[in-house]
Length: 385
Image 1 (cartoon, helix red, strand yellow):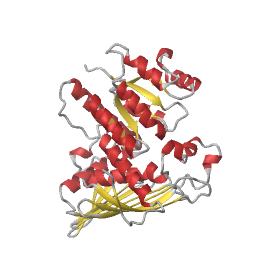
Image 2 (cartoon, one colour):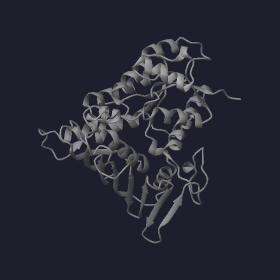
Image 3 (tube, one colour):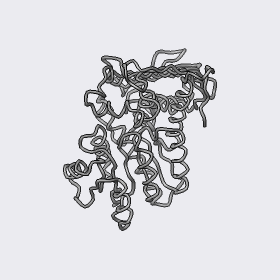
Image 4 (cartoon, helix red, strand yellow):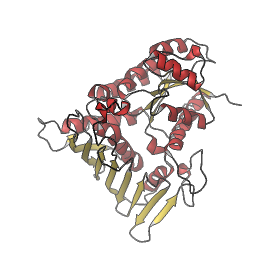
């Protein structure tokens, strides 16, 4: 019987938004156990979180560097196989670099970094160390997103002409960052998230979905960003026109000030022979429209679904494939990769976002920010990769 993979965690204390989701996703694989953590930069909060989670006191740390140093010195049958990074955005890069220096594989919340330079430095370090990296762009793990990708690869819609992704939210329609809301506090702070707010936070998910499903690469952007809330230093709304490497055009609309919207993500891809549509509000359905026949609706796990669209954790027919299962699917794929390496199978490839997805996302943000600068006189800005 194969042993459980051991996971350490940085960030993600019991008061965090994503820590509990990541721990649940790891548990749901049935293949991963949490063995250590530095759950907060506040030592007492980290200790309290570790106790609530049920970890031994000796393997709960008040500083992530202490955890990485001490855990890297443990015997091979005790030390973590990988570190999950669930800290605020500005900490992803220093934690990841320190984890690589300590010899650990990494699973990281998105976005990977807050700048293009950081993203490129991280890849160089990763390659130099020969370690593995998974970035949790979790929407790409939804079954019907994988089905959409399979239909594109099967040329069911022909050569792609148009890609549109929209992601309206409403939770930042008021200035929550001055009302004690922890999530709003750091997500609207340029010191902690970088030069973009909304477009970096949720627009990057849109771009990753567009590129993942179509297999195309974004080449240049024309952007319109603004902060609707007075006093907010980063964008809370934006639209970006897109040009892809095959000549296709597209648009991303992302907003966090659309009152009444929670996470109404929608993807539309249109080719010369047909189009596909998917939305997060109905994640188990994918619609294929063609020139010559009626619309075809694919169901997760239903007739005609591709092998890639079947998750390792199927739910009963008709039940929604929630975000937790999608995240679990990424953990499962990353576990497959780590086990393949342990079995001396370095060529085994599994479907999860890599460091390159993180670089592409940051290239998008970088190009958008450069495009909207007042001194820029060019309509289109090319991605710097």
